Structure formats: C-alpha cells, structure tokens
Image: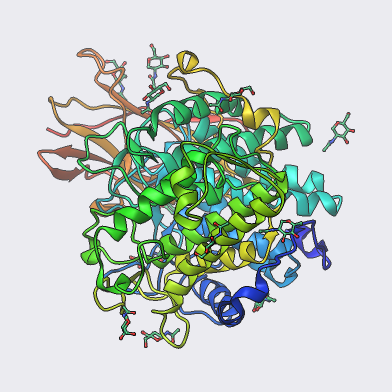
Length: 610
Ligand SMILES: *[C@@H]1O[C@H](CO)[C@@H](O)[C@H](O)[C@H]1NC(C)=O
Ligand SMILES: *[C@@H]1O[C@H](CO)[C@@H](O)[C@H](O)[C@H]1NC(C)=O
Ligand SMILES: *[C@@H]1O[C@H](CO)[C@@H](O)[C@H](O)[C@H]1NC(C)=O
Ligand SMILES: *[C@@H]1O[C@H](CO)[C@@H](O)[C@H](O)[C@H]1NC(C)=O
Ligand SMILES: *[C@@H]1O[C@H](CO)[C@@H](O)[C@H](O)[C@H]1NC(C)=O
Ligand SMILES: *[C@@H]1O[C@H](CO)[C@@H](O)[C@H](O)[C@H]1NC(C)=O
Ligand SMILES: *[C@@H]1O[C@H](CO)[C@@H](O)[C@H](O)[C@H]1NC(C)=O
Ligand SMILES: *[C@@H]1O[C@H](CO)[C@@H](O)[C@H](O)[C@H]1NC(C)=O
Ligand SMILES: *[C@@H]1O[C@H](CO)[C@@H](O)[C@H](O)[C@H]1NC(C)=O
Ligand SMILES: *[C@@H]1O[C@H](CO)[C@@H](O)[C@H](O)[C@H]1NC(C)=O
Ligand SMILES: *[C@@H]1O[C@H](CO)[C@@H](O)[C@H](O)[C@H]1NC(C)=O
Ligand SMILES: CC(=O)N[C@H]1CO[C@H](CO)[C@@H](O)[C@@H]1O
C-alpha cells in the first residue's frame, strides 16, 4: 500500500477558534501542555508494530486495551477501543503529524484481516455477523471464551475512523485510492450497521444487553457519513438509507422527561436508574462543530444532552465519595461510569470525567458559533449550576459570553479533578479508587490516554472537519408514528477487503447428512482462521451449521463460508451434545476455488455421530 506515503505535510482545515480563555487557567494549561504528549505516547506505546512498545507480541496496528495481564487481564484488542484510539490518531494526522501514517496503515491492514476471521459472533460471509465480535487476541486471532457479545458499536466506530481519513486522501487527489482500498472495508461495517441496528447487543461497558444510546448514536453517524461519502465517491450505500429510522428510534425512546436525562439502555430488563456516562460519550463521538444544537441528533450542545450532563454529575455528588469531599455543590467532581457501578468497587473513571469536560468545550464552541444561547426548561438546570441567575430566554453578545465562560471554567474543573489524582509520571489507569484516589484497575489504559488527547484538542479549539451532521441526510427526522422496525438485508454482500490487506476468499458450502437428536448441534473446525484455526481443539470451534433444511429423509446440516482462495483446507465436523464436543474422527480436506474465479465448492459429506 503505497498511497499513504504520498502524504506530505498535509494539513486539513481543522477549525481554530480563538480561545480567549487561556489566560484564565494558566496552571491547567501548563499541566495539559505536559500531559498531552505523555498521553499520546502512552496510547501509541500500547499499539503493536511501533518502536517504543509496552505490548510485546501484539501484531502491527493492533491496539492493546492495556498492558495489564492480571487483575484485570486487558491484554486483548477491542474493536471499540481500537477504533476510538485510531479516530484520535487520524485527528492527529489531520492536524499535521504525518509520522503517524505508518501506524494507520498497519491498523487498516489488521482490521481488513480481522473482518474475515470466524468468531463466536459469526463470520463475514454471508451474514456479516462476525463483525459484531467485540474483542480478539492481539495476534489477530479469535477469542472464544465467554463474553458479552455481540457489541454493535464496533463496526460503526471503525467505519467512522476510516471515513475520517477520506478528506486527507481527497486533498491529495487520491480519491480512487480511497475508493479501492478503504471503501470495501467501510462498506462491510456500514452494511452491518444497516442490517443489525434494530437488534439488541451488549453496551460499551459490556454488561447490559439491550439498545444502548451510545451504540445507536454512533450507528446513526456512521450511516449519515457513509451516505455523504458514497455520493462523493459516485458509489452507493443502500444500507445507509436506514439512518432516518435509527434517528427516529433515538429521538423517541431514550428521553426521561420526568427526571431530565437521556437513558443509557432500553430494551433491557436491567434494574438500574439508566443514568450513565454512555450518552455523554456518544455526544463527543458524534460531535460536529458545524451542527446546530437542536437538530435532532444529540450534539454536545443539545438541551437534553446538557440536562443529562447535570443529572449524571448530580448522581455522583449524591454518592459523597471521599475523593470529591472538597468540592462544593456546584464544583466539578470525579465521576465513574454510572452510579450503581461495582466493578473494581465502582471507581472514578478518568475517561468519563474527561468526557464531561470535552463535551462542554464542544458545546461552548457550537453555541458560540451560532451567536445565540437559548436557555429553555430542559437545559435551565444545567446553566443554573454554572450561572445561578440564568433564566429561560435568549442570550447573545456579552451576556452569552459571560455564561459560556462559566461553562468553560466548569469544564476545566473536571480536567483539574483528574489532574489531582494522576501519578507524577502522568500515566492514566482505567480508574481511581473513589476513597483514596489511587490509580486502580487496568494501568496505562489506551482509551484513557486517547480521551486526554481529544479533550486537550477540543479545549484548544481544534475541531475535526465536519462529517455532515447538519446535512439533509443527518437531520432527516421522522415523527414518532413513522418509527418502524427495519433493517437492510446485506446478506451475501459482505466481502473481504482485499486491497486493504484481507486475504482473497472463495466460497465453500459445507453440507453434510448427519442424523442428530433434539438439542444436538453440528459445527465444523478447520486449519484456517475462517474455520477457527485448530483441528481437534474445542476452543477453536466457532462455525455452526444450520439445520434449516433438515428432514427425516435428508438430515442435512449446512453452512456457507468463505475461505482462502486456492488453498487446501483440512476440516473436521464436531457434534455438540449435552455440553460435550464430539469430534468426528475423520479429517477431510477441500480445495478452495481460485481467487476471483467465482466458483463455489459444495462438500456433500456424511457423518455418523451415533
Ligand atoms: C466566542 O467566539 C468569539 C469569536 O470567535 C471569541 O472571540 C470568543 O472568545 C468566544 N467565546 C467563548 C466563550 O468561547
Ligand atoms: C507525532 O507522532 C509521533 C509518533 O509517530 C510522536 O512521537 C510525536 O510526539 C507526535 N508529535 C506531536 C507534535 O504530537
Ligand atoms: C495468539 O495469542 C493467543 C493468546 O496469547 C495464543 O493462545 C495463540 O496461540 C496465539 N496464536 C498464534 C497463531 O500465534
Ligand atoms: C426496533 O425499532 C423499533 C422502531 O423504532 C423500536 O420500537 C424497537 O424498540 C427497536 N428494537 C430494537 C431492539 O432496536
Ligand atoms: C463523480 O462524478 C462527477 C460527475 O460525473 C465527477 O465530476 C466526479 O469527479 C466523480 N467523482 C469521482 C470520485 O469519481
Ligand atoms: C481536601 O482538603 C484537605 C485540606 O486542604 C486536604 O488535606 C485533603 O487532602 C483534600 N481531599 C482531597 C480528596 O483532595
Ligand atoms: C459566573 O460564575 C461566577 C462565580 O461563580 C459568578 O459570580 C457569576 O455571576 C457567573 N456569571 C454569570 C453570567 O452567571
Ligand atoms: C507511573 O507511576 C505509576 C504509579 O507510581 C506506576 O504504577 C506506573 O507503572 C508508572 N507508569 C509508567 C508508564 O511508568
Ligand atoms: C435449503 O433450502 C432452501 C429452500 O428450499 C434452498 O434454497 C437452499 O438451497 C437449501 N440449502 C442447502 C444448503 O441445501
Ligand atoms: C491445512 O491442511 C491441509 C491438508 O493437510 C494442508 O495442505 C494445508 O497446508 C494446511 N493449511 C495450513 C494453513 O496449515
Ligand atoms: C445425503 O442424503 C441424501 C438424501 O437421502 C442423499 O441423496 C445423498 O446422497 C446423501 N449424501 C451423502 C454424502 O451421503
Ligand atoms: C425532534 C426533532 O428534532 N424534530 C425536528 C425534525 O425536523 C423538523 C424540520 O426540520 C424540525 O422542526 C423538528 O424540530
């Protein structure tokens, strides 16, 4: 892949607001000036293939969540954390750090391969459901242990990260290259979003199965950005037509008007308040400096989002954590993920606390750009917290600026709260103990580092290019009675992104006659990643056969797969019966059709498991 080497000091138009606030918080500004490069270096040190690495053994471009291997073991690569980290790195590239081009290329290659690996969520071909797998080993192999899967934010976030690269290549007149290398990779993920957005999955904290505000928000952004990008590329994204339905779902189900907050998870029976940092994180990852505050998607300056900010912070005030003991009832404090959290004793999370700051820097920029602050019944509580005399009404000019300055001061307070508990070397763990403030849970968390870098950029008035939140595609909102259950059926359209580094795959249809009894299931395992990797190994068994065509006269199980073109693949059928794996003694082999031949091989086997 030569394309990226053509980059030569290109700097795209990030907007640079004039932060008149710098003078006010000199101490914090100098802390950030020291910490920001430490945070960037920390994130990069957790990525395979770079020189100063903490993560020996990770493949190039694979983001390790944390080098911690015990209590907790985070030495894995999550699709979500990786995409959020590379979104930050791509921002840094756009801001002019061209030295990051090599690692972005590594990430591209690793994800193209990863998309093709069979895993417990499924496979790429033909249903795309394998794209929802949340985590992998850092050597680009499948993790088959029990986990909260699928997680449907991952494909959306990965598509967004790669789509954010488009303006860089367009500026270099490399549109054709983008279309050839990136678009197939992106389209798989957009197809996944269009096909599965209306099904539940696990949330970003990997605990709740339902519909998460964060997931739905980033899915909406991905499809809007995809629709606009497909137009620029003169191609199509049929799955992107789902965007208005996703927005309809988001707008009509998550607002708790009585208590004034956006609910984190619906379509679940989990017994919690629903108050959570999830929507705050959503807002910063769909942020578009050019969008208006009440356009319908939930931008940082959206009234309901500001109300959620207040409700969330207040819910943590009520916990009276010792780490927050010196804060007044209106000061910024440290927060965790949600008030009921017990993981690692429910500590304070730097990345959630920094997101509170980042959201407000974004909101101030958006409000300031429009020149008008509309205080309404919904956001009044938030604004009163920073400016006690504010009333419902419209503020402009100096009156508006005075309020926005207080919002910014408040935002700075969250960063100061994190600063107060950082170790002197600037390393950021997943949590701070809420009693002692000591760093706890996973050390050197990649996502924590990335969250510091993006916060610092936004505070400095450096915003990514618009992704189209304010476009007609982004704001198409339907009325509540127009919301429908829907999906785009992309079955059979999920294809390996070969130009980006995925292996060339061809179709093999496994069909066997195997008489089974009720409750038994049939699987196939083979010596390629698309079939789990290791013969005779229960931990490698992920490819499940379908009994939809099973009849007494023809006891057929089948699965349609894609495997490395032209190779000889050894495979073995496996019966799951009463929780036990029974491997067929016979190892068979199949010759996969050649690359691009369009051929399909059907195995036509028979197994007697009795
Ligand atoms: C709002 O924008 C103006 C003009 O760009 C700038 O001078 C001012 O500092 C901004 N105010 C805030 C509170 O960001
Ligand atoms: C640019 O990225 C490199 C890693 O490739 C990093 O070491 C360096 O600190 C970054 N420069 C800036 C100004 O952030
Ligand atoms: C990949 O890493 C896992 C976990 O460390 C290990 O069990 C497995 O053997 C590795 N696979 C390969 C092909 O290196
Ligand atoms: C599917 O969409 C409908 C219509 O918006 C909504 O009522 C339902 O809760 C959604 N279900 C899931 C699981 O997303
Ligand atoms: C798309 O089509 C338009 C009109 O034909 C043309 O001007 C433009 O260059 C095309 N863009 C790409 C990426 O091919
Ligand atoms: C609160 O302030 C007291 C007195 O300045 C100080 O000793 C204590 O460490 C502070 N607590 C925290 C959690 O910052
Ligand atoms: C901003 O905050 C200060 C200090 O809390 C307060 O005195 C002032 O009235 C606030 N400004 C506005 C416009 O409310
Ligand atoms: C920074 O200091 C902390 C606490 O002393 C330690 O646990 C951590 O490993 C250090 N991080 C680095 C990158 O040296
Ligand atoms: C299963 O049955 C359907 C419907 O009759 C048919 O179209 C399909 O080809 C069959 N698949 C296999 C693998 O036999
Ligand atoms: C899988 O097994 C077949 C048959 O033994 C062999 O030809 C092929 O090289 C093996 N593939 C890999 C990736 O080991
Ligand atoms: C599978 O069963 C069908 C129907 O009985 C039969 O026609 C076919 O030959 C069998 N296939 C094998 C490989 O035994
Ligand atoms: C909920 C919401 O944002 N509704 C908007 C949908 O679009 C119309 C027309 O653009 C707006 O007037 C609504 O406020």
